[in-house]
Image (cartoon, rainbow, N blue to C red; front, side):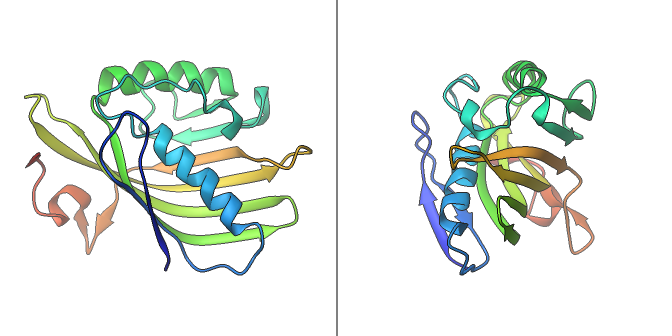
Length: 180
């Protein structure tokens, strides 16, 4: 599995994306878009904002989202709702959020549609302001290539409760809180 390292501007922590091998000619462009999505969700100490990342998503009501980390509804429709939900929630509930690693388990591309199944792992700042609390979700994105040739997310499905060998993610990696 090839791995790429990259950074989000303003965040000095390294971000990793590891993907299954694909010979499809569109795979590099699609994985580059997924790396931008990872950067979006890794604001670190900067405020979380969707500004500059709008092109990752289908316009208007073309985006369907399922996410059990969402504070109000785990299902919602439309980019405007997406922006309001995450700009409020991440800044309030997930301070210092960094999505440190994405591991792509499946990548399927057919014509102008693609499906990417992956697991992200990362952490947020603990209530004490110094510790880091592990976080992880399984995810599936459905991407559609628009008329202008750009891949955009039309469906985002994220589910928490990641387990490794029957243990919750935080326990499996060693502890629920680790020092930075």
